[in-house]
Length: 344
Image (cartoon, rainbow, N blue to C red; front, side, top):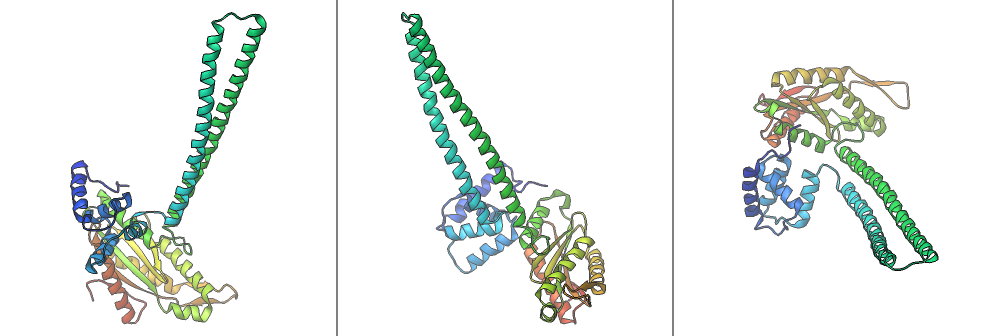
């Protein structure tokens, strides 16, 4: 995968200058999240973020710290803010414990060092056998105390390392979950936006067309009203499985919300995307889905599809809009059909 920020030092320095110029008139502080938001906005690598900020500018709304945090959590961060907050809190707790332990061990080390110096001074004097034996016993006792302290520190360090590893895994899982639709197991809108961003940064797809397909289940409200929401969920999962089975390689599928899905087809022409769309549409039309509470099956579920295309590093917001328009043309013309953007 290509780097998220491929700019070299000179380019990033110019971006920094632009960030300072652009953000100077806004009340938001110069925090790391703010820098990331402005960086991605000014480089144009995050179309949804760009659109959100342009809307703020159009409404003459000031970009405050609260708005920056919201933009960062929604468009830049790859994990949900609740998971990040929990991770930070737990890491702070672990670090506080380690600091306290280090302070305690440091105190023991200081006392041990001072004791050794005192024992060394005593050894320069005249000592009879009983006095020497007492001195050796004191040294052994202090050494054992220091040994126990070091062992305790090592044990706590090992426990802390395991806990930090666990926290890192939990954060990674939360990051993955934040990009996945829980009902269907496919990407959600945020996950698809990340895929689009990665395509834009991938030199393998430079100057290549990417087809974008929007799909919507026909009369889905009627399905829910007739058979219940549990069956409606089963329909969503069945269509998701079919979509995942029909695409491969670099292709991506996502549930955009409700009964709407999207398919991303890199290095695919509109003609090729139309063939894929028709294959999907006819497969769903012929499918049968068994009801959960009865033996009967329901058939005749159909979808409407709209397709557009875009260069990998092009204007994806506009491409999605064109695919949406094509989708609703399919709806307007009777549903259960595929419409290409540009043929409207």
